[in-house]
Length: 253
Image (tube, rainbow, N blue to C red; front, side, top):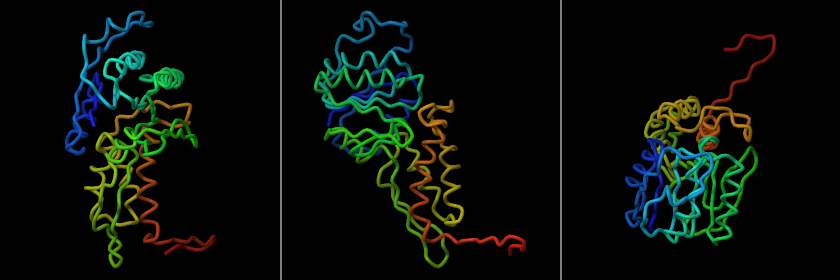
């Protein structure tokens, strides 16, 4: 698969580095660094695009300016790409209205576009856009990417006697690499502490999603992202956790 990754800052550069290190060797990844400054209205997209771009099957937009989203239809045309993933880890970088427009523009070009919010909500068949709202898609190219990067999925092995985590396998990493980092540091942790530890590791990595409150979730995208990882951990360690009961009027042990 030929991939063109669009970046214009540290956020995207970090994503690309993780994909290059842990993605399949058969993926060929090219990077284009987009401008960092755009006018309020882009009248002539060609003024902000290079004269040529490499052919690509899939475009990954990790841009930190909404102006780049307006260029994506032209970029898809130039590269002959058939699928686009435009990450939303900040409403300022890709507002919800513009994301809907982008999906519509590209659909008219027969290009499938996924706009996961946050980026680590992407799976092989759908992605998040708001609280309890997901959008499904049909694209072998996006699904192939999401087999390896997207909504974190780790497999936890627990020692039944000690109730310590003995092994952790990364089935699908977050695009930024956070899940792999957390997995490495959960080994040896008690199941009673693992969920909280996963949340701390997510913040320490650190997650680069927005800390501004997002109206689609009623929470920050950083917290939404952290809860995705914590939920994955919780569902696996729950059978091993000790239950504590408190009786009103009595002292607990």
